[in-house]
Length: 282
Ligand SMILES: *Cc1c(COP(=O)(O)O)cnc(C)c1O
Image (tube, rainbow, N blue to C red):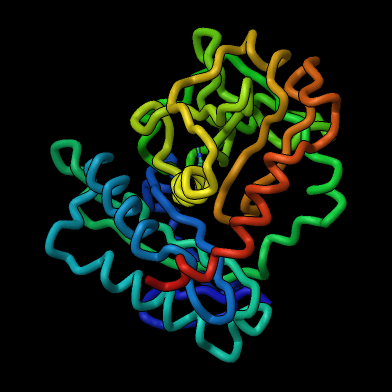
């Protein structure tokens, strides 16, 4: 069963609630992080907490000197070790949220709230990794791409009613940026290509995968792939903290890599799974 931490205590998730006066409810003001828990440890918590702080500050939340990031870090670690952590803390997810609170003062959110939710690990079926997933390209752009905002509405709308696609792929001006909630890569002419930081979210899994790929002798180029390159790519894949490396076999009407996951995404997934302990709770 999922649990949460809210108002100073751990409790069943159904007993956590946010006042309707909170700007998260009224205006979608909120930032968050999703982190994997493996064997009671939170994966790459330091990187996630840094990004949470950066997101909060850049949207105008007044958190400097509040100790809120330190508190959230401690609660995430404590929750991962609790007996009632979902999945016994062996394979779980912790999501940490900071919301706008009730007050806007000169454009600043002066009294942000926070809460955490602990869920069962996001279970991706082995078949999904074997088959690969499809993405829906859209010319929309994710505003303020370095902020991990709770507002996924306009991205979700790009794939409404589609049961054949996992999520949208943002391709403003004909260049691939990232998907709804993952970093995006293609493999073409022996090179792994992914969008540079600053144009997309600074993905924690993205950075781990790049580090592992470079150490394994791959060439990595940080640029946004052209939409016209999808058809020429040998492979495509996406990464995020919950499902690691996931092969992509179709983007819109374009079949990638003959419609089957290829050896590069398989190799990177093996490397990720084999090395992930190095990023546990450091
Ligand atoms: C969460 C997210 C990612 C993936 O980031 P990780 O740190 O690897 O989990 C990528 N893009 C967007 C838009 C996201 O919201």
